[in-house]
Image (cartoon, rainbow, N blue to C red; front, side, top):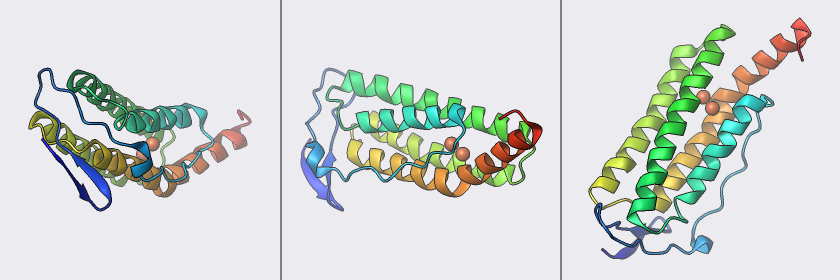
Length: 161
Ligand SMILES: [Fe+2]
Ligand SMILES: [Fe+2]
């Protein structure tokens, strides 16, 4: 276990599952999160908000056991969010479903790579946080916002909103 830096982020080696204690990462060394896009769909905005909160906890979690629990929560909530959002997109027959789903799978792959790194005792929590936060921020702006605009318009035209 040791520390180094990659692209300005501390590299942290987490001890393999057991009784390890994680080295602390000073929050001031971690880049601040980018601006978060609000979609105007409360049911999706609250899920995004919780995901950002979980991602931020990656750099506040200092034991192997709590990191394992946090990663399990992130895995479950990513799955919940993607499934939920994909149902919403299909329900409103928004075009571009396959591309949207493929983008979700890209994030899932990045997360699973982080999970595998954790199992090997090589997780860099700051890098995983930056990857997931950056992905969600960009995806929400470029992929989620267009479907959200369309759904809000459909609801408005139907008089439901
Ligand atoms: Fe999405
Ligand atoms: Fe989303």
